[in-house]
Image 1 (cartoon, one colour):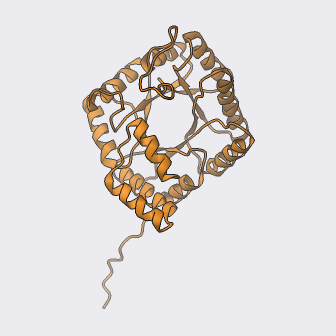
Image 2 (tube, helix red, strand yellow; image 1 turned 60 degrees about the vertical axis):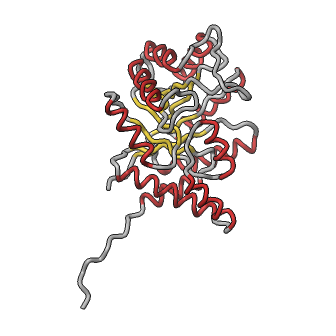
Image 3 (cartoon, helix red, strand yellow; image 1 turned 135 degrees about the horizontal axis):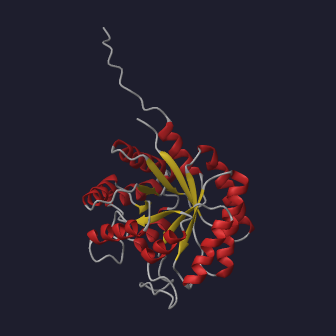
Amino acid sequence: MPLPSLSFEFFPPQGVPASFRLWEAVGELAPLEPDFVSVTFATGGAQRDLTLDTVKTIKEHFDLTVAAHLTCCNATREETLAAAESYSAAGVLEIVALRGDPPSGTDTFCPHPDGFKDSCELISALEDLNRFKIRASAYPDPHPEAPSPHADVEWLKRKVDAGASSAITQFFFEAESYFRFRDACDAARIDVPIIPGILPIEDWVRMKNFANRCGAHVPAWLADAFDTALRDDRHDLLAISVCTELCSDLMDGGVENLHFYTLNKPHLTRDVVRALRTPRPTADLRYVA
């Protein structure tokens, strides 16, 4: 079976210890030769500068293709496009264009009065610049604000029509979630690559809270398995096994790209990729007398 291409997501560090953790993570995963790495976007002037600095450092010191995130949150159209111009000046050729999450403590996204109202408007404006390969988000499990499962397919179709040339999904834990979404996208004539987003479970409790906020379904069997693993002090072993099996199931189903949400912690991602690159044992069918 051909190995999938890889990509990794990182986030900008805040503070010196976090910077060391980030550069350790990038240095650990860069030798795995990813197609690209992405850097998440922090809203607010100083935070945006931190995102840009992170992008520049990765490009300069690791010679990796960087897809910089860009959101509509808390900014005018001019400020958002100015951030895109800064990326372009830094040699960035790819942008992951997102609406962004509602402010902390709220459930509803409220666009800036002079800003982009959603990701489709942002993608369209970036497409008009004709400078970037644009990636969008996709949701195999229903987005918390989606009125129906098919609404996520309709939104992705709008993003592609606006100019997105590929999509990266929110994380999920059962391959069938991705395949069901992929089939629905095929039926809607969405013909761009839909890259599955993979989250190695570094912290079970934190992940459950994160999944609840973003609408990712946590199956009962997974909760039971981690409850047992935590009691037996086998959390990481289970995390690697579950993630490797998910990736293998996706590859068996024809997936050619995997995008890992690293949380700036490389070790589980590295171990999963190593497991995927280890040849699977084959049965010895020779007759033994």
